[in-house]
Amino acid sequence: MNARQRNARRIVRDIAHARAGDKGNTSNVSVWAYDPADFELLKRSLTAERISDAFPDLIRGKVERYVIAHLHGLNFVLQDALEGGVNGSLNLDSHGKSWSYLVLGLELEERADDRPVG
Amino acid sequence: MWNANGTTRPQTLKVTVGFDAGYQAEAGVSYAGSGAQERGRLAAEIVGERLSQVHGIKADLRIDLIGVSSLFATAGVRAVDALDVRLHVTLRSRAKEDAEIMLWEIESLLCCGPAGGGGFRGSIVPCVMTKSVLVARDQVKPGLEVLVA
Image (cartoon, each protein chain N blue to C red):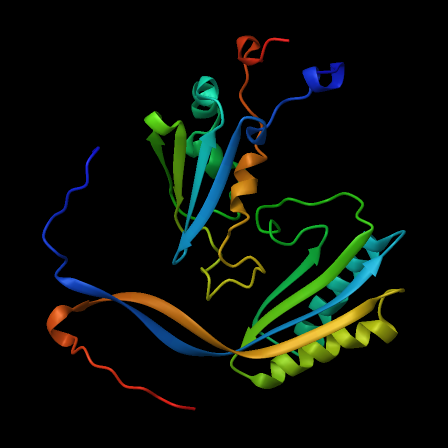
């Protein structure tokens, strides 16, 4: 790790993967820590409010978070978040499959002891 | 909850109802090289202004710049100085004429829009919108009918 990488804030993608799905105008994004040791950091960083506040123009409805602790994952249900849904949205990605990378691009809420050693 | 379990079956059935929503049109033209993002942005402004103010079209319209801001446009995510940009316009209207006008507007950017635009494509397809509703079980009579075009 060089000096620039040490100073740059890490993003969710650095410690987790994600997948998005749709039902009507509801989007569903699940986020999974690669390493169980990072799950607490992931939980702290990705609250329902954080997701909701990050994309106020996209997510018009309520955001709910479900914690799946034994699989080190978080599942977010985003209401009224698909610009009308698969048959109503004029977005090229009308299913919102790319929404997973909106979440993976958010910065982590890191503390000094969250960094990997070395 | 760790094991599979269940309750009584729902009293209603989910039905997806389709509605005729007219036509959905898509069209695009690309810009590349120095100033591509600015030229694409100018093309987007021209199209938006001409469709609404010259043609008076009130249809659902979305104007994206692929390479700058498209899938994440509504979320407010943008590139800074993209060198390969595609203007992509989508319109939905009950009037086919609105769709045809939009395609002509995009194609005409090749000759009288920002410099260096290329690669026009446009398409118009029928549009079906769907809504999910719950229907009482006794209103549903299962049956099968094969329709041949």
